[in-house]
Length: 76
Image (cartoon, rainbow, N blue to C red; front, side):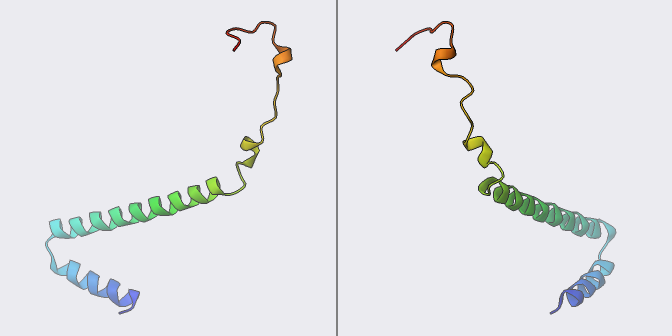
């Protein structure tokens, strides 16, 4: 069954249902769209996090050395 055939069949079925049941189907379809969007977003974020976009954070240069300190507390 093609996507278009599924859509047409679903429309025929929805037209035979009472309004409250049609609303339930519409709500469920909205839920599925939101779920799909979240999955897509999560995959995109994972791709960014595992990519080279944030590599600069791993290679942070040392701005100060111990010799820059005026006082050292709790020297171990």
